[in-house]
Length: 110
Image (cartoon, rainbow, N blue to C red; front, side, top):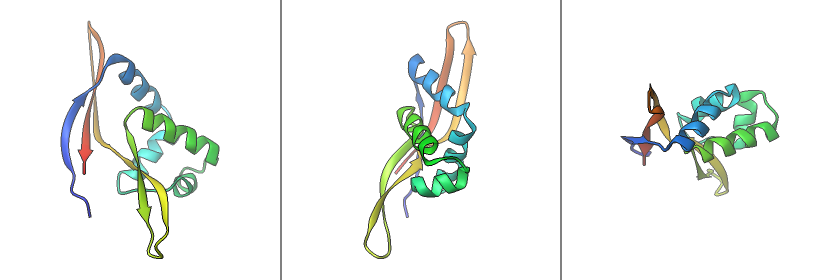
């Protein structure tokens, strides 16, 4: 079992745009919710979202690009292993002012 510590990270404008864009997608949000309780494989996420595997992989890539998801290796009881994905964020705060839009993430650290 991993322990998680939280810290807040503010992001440059272009990364903020990527994060807001990906969070606007229902499939991506479903993936974040599913992976917040622990690593899930792309197959598990495809089943959870009722989307095609191609769509799920595109959303996974978008979430990885936005630093909202991390790739990890999950070891099975039989000794095999597979790639899985886990949410890296617990909270997203958006600040809008005359300087623009800023996204601050409360991220989880292993």
